[in-house]
Length: 418
View 1 (cartoon, helix red, strand yellow):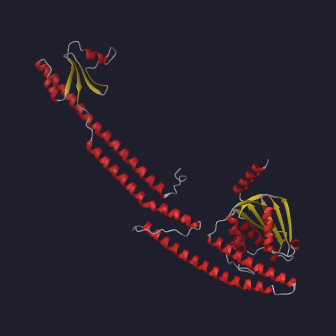
View 2 (cartoon, helix red, strand yellow; view 1 turned 45 degrees about the vertical axis):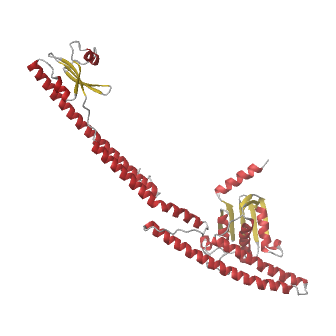
View 3 (cartoon, helix red, strand yellow; view 1 turned 180 degrees about the vertical axis):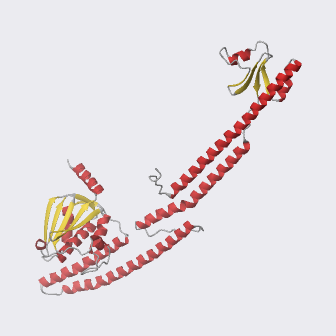
């Protein structure tokens, strides 16, 4: 049972410990209170027996009841007459015939004396003494326990705030401050994290500044080269230079977007698009002179998915571009069959597990080793899965929706049908 009980939250553990402590405190107080009341009741019972014994001896000696003594013992005579109306009422026709009995009627304690000498109904006005000292001790212990609980809960409250800020930081929000002026371990952790955030923020800003400066410096010669290409008389060569400079300009824009994605300082703009339209956009980004010679696409069963058009077309473009680059026949086959987009080409199997290529700047035969890293980052943003397999001499990449996303997509498409 205890193995199955898993309490992950620190607050839950504290609540559980103090709940056990409160239950033990209440149990201990209840047991001590009962014991104290039982002792007080035993004292009253012993006093009653002593009083009755004294009354019996006094009656034998003087022939009457010592009412003054009973008054001094806080005992009241209810019925001492010959008819004993109260006595008969309390005992009843089928009641007890004992010579001495104590009964309780409506929180009153009555002493019934029914012997051959005299018959009496007495009410004992004494009550079991409530242990005031024990109650005060319990109240003090309870107040201390509540104070300790509130004090500890207040002490760990900054952890919740720190957790929220860490979640915000993990989502790309760098404008957070966690500095604390307190002098405990939680404050030390918060201050260390605040310093780490500041360092990361400075590094990201320095990297962004460097990349922007590099891209700005690259755009200037590209613009100049494009202007100079206008001076070329041959239309074919002029168009070729235009395409080259346009390609370079597009690559710089892609690097800018990749930089935003890697720094998580980017908010995608999701809309629903057909997979075939996204594929067409990816082919346009390739800027192939004759797409039909390098690509063969088949739309078996089209489907829609929520996507940032620019990002997802960039990811699929990179997969197709890699397929063309590494296949011996420079040819890639593409299949759209809901809920998958399959991109395959002839070539050699990857020498490492696919997870190795999801890290930036991995070992690559050509390039910087960023292709699959960029693809995986974009697909993660879209909550899409990327599967790799090698079968019959072909490298196959499959893009598919995750299970939950696939169910939502099916519901939205069925809702849109007449």
